[in-house]
Image (cartoon, rainbow, N blue to C red; front, top):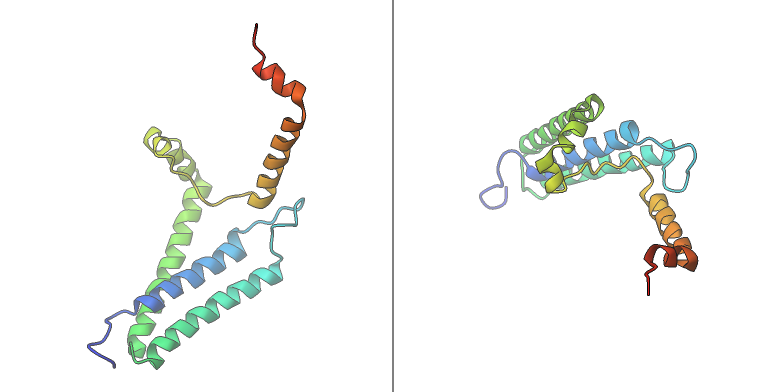
Length: 155
C-alpha cells in the first residue's frame, strides 16, 4: 500500500458502482423510446452495449485501485457494494416517487416553484422538441402579418 492508505471504503469504486447500476437501470428500465420518433432514442442493443461499457468501466476503476496499491481488495469490494446498493435504492425511490405522484405533488408546492426546482428526467426527445420549437419561432418570424397584428398601435 502506497503512503498511509486511502481508507475504507474506496470512494472511486463506490461512485463507479453507483453510476454503473443507476445508468444501466435508467437505460434498460426507465428509458422509454417513442414509436413516432426514432432520431434521439437508442435501440435495445445500443442500450445493452452502453450499459456493458459502464459496468466494464466500473470494473476497470475497481481493479486499478488494487493494481496501483491505493486500496486493498476488501476496501474496493466494500466501496463497490455500497455504490451498487445506493444505486439500486436511489433508482427505486425515484421510480416510486415519480409513479406514485409524490414527485409531481412536491414539484407543485409554492417554494419549489419559486426556486424553479424541476424533475430533470425528461420524457421527450429534447433534440426533437428543441427543433420543433425553433421551427415554429422561425415560421412566425417569416409571417409579418402575424407579427404586426400583435404589435399594432394606433397613430
